[in-house]
Amino acid sequence: MKNSSQELQIMGPENSSIYIDNEKVGESLIITRAGFPEIEMKPTKTIRVEKDGFNPESAEISSSFSLWFWGNILFLPAAPIGFFTDYYLGYHKTYNPKSVVINLLKENTNFKVQSKNPSHEKFNQRVLQDKDKLISVSYGNLTNVRMVKVDDSGKEIPNSEISFGGLLSPNKDAKIAAGRYLIQGTFEGDRFTKNARIRYTAKVAGQSIVDVPGGGVGVFCGTIDLEKKGTGIRFLHINEEDTVLFEGLMPRFDFLRRIATSNCNKVFNPQDLRK
Image 1 (tube, one colour):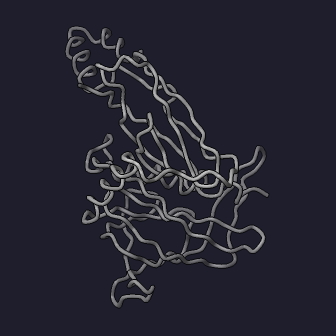
Image 2 (cartoon, one colour):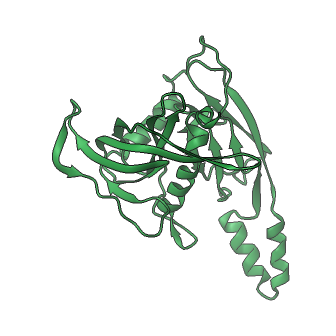
Image 3 (cartoon, helix red, strand yellow):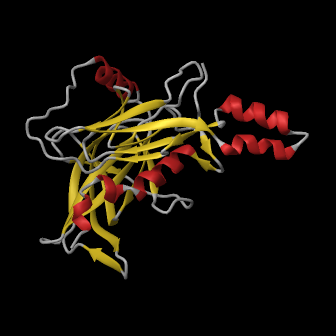
């Protein structure tokens, strides 16, 4: 049973659960290859985002044949190879839409996510299986970043400061083991209007202790309190099993990390950058 290999991006708000046809597939932001199997005749899939204290929101995606698939005919006599390759890899189908953003939910204090079910348990088991894997982390909207490992009480462990490096990514990265970390930094980011770009820089640095899981990629995102000019720090994790694959010439973990970094503002407190 072959799936479409084209990727679907789904975004919800902070601490939200994301489902595809009632199966939990991630939290807050995911990049998935949850395609339409050839044996499955259903033309649509339902995306749902849930968060404690808010009404769930849903959207639908559909699959259709890609026009690029028929473009193989232009490359005769190699067309048969192109048709076969695209079909085998799943590129003959495309999603509509390819990106789903459901990050503004309506408040409902009575709603609570039903986390005690097989779908959540299956997702949690996958996360648990990755606890011994390294995770590739970076940071967005932060300057003067310092990161160090801490014990259960939050006390810094000597000689455990993390060195960020990397020349190919716009934000420096590091590969670390799962564990508890203290990260410090100052928010600095842009807000674009119709007429100008506004640069916001916090006057007060912030810090946060984060329990970093294993596997996949993670980004430390900066937020700002415009009244107090203070920095907030959040953690965004994209967990998936095939982070060692390649996306073009870029390692897949770098590809995923760039996507996560570019969406910090949309996942965490979108209103923070509004005047």
